[in-house]
Image (cartoon, rainbow, N blue to C red):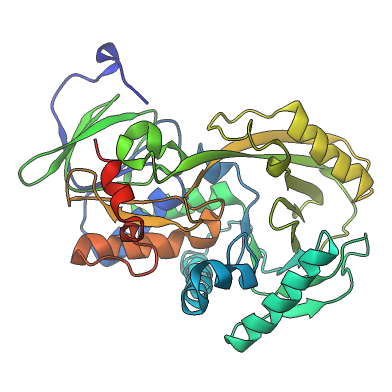
Length: 387
């Protein structure tokens, strides 16, 4: 993204201890952890649009353990020990979320309903059954059904009782309010300039000078600085919501390796998202507009698989930031060790952001690389992205 000369603010700089660029779930999680660890910090939260305007206010509100890949596939990709650590990190995120809600008494429409990961085809059932065995061996809670718990033609299911549904934008707002950070909306950051003992941020509404800066832009990071172009690629997700229906779902549902997902909200409305995989080329974008192709696939699934004939009340889209290996990335830079970034959540920011933000804050305080999500795992790829 760019800011024209005529759009830059005139006047003096604003001084803060910490500036966070991006006011989505990661940005507000960073602000919350910073406040918990150092109550006197002066924190600025800088957002190009409005609080939670990106994917953080446009997702399905599903707080799931693990990743889109089933656990057996996670072990193939990352190794047994690392897969365990990733799964545990998502459980820690759930713990921090529940503690936050309990401490503040905030209503974020938290539903501890659990989830079903359902098999769209028989081969997926084999993955789910293997994942169930491996999860239990590794000390994690799970259940397996060889039959379809929804009785609509799926081929078995893996159940995770600890998974939760939330109102995503209410959570973002609550974390921001609890952090006490000063929010600057419609304040697009143009660039960062390292100085001797600080970092200067040039933006549409002001210049900021801070001792530490966090970049939490996820899908939009590649447009902010070339450092992130090899690390994050935008992918669009689309959702529709029906009018209120009789209650027929009591859990979140994740199907077809995460490419289809749905839940019934408190008021009975059905939220359905996915089918990005059928139109992969056109969905590699940060443009948050719906398309007739994806929305048509969602409606066909609604009628033909779920047997739901209902008025569609809302449709929307949001851009997610995908990393090369499917894991979030925590790193130092670009251009200054006073700049820390946390991004690349690959569609699972609401399953990991609080734990990843905690680790990013630790990196800023200690300088020690994160062993699980650190950018060092990409080696030269990171350096090649520097300006």
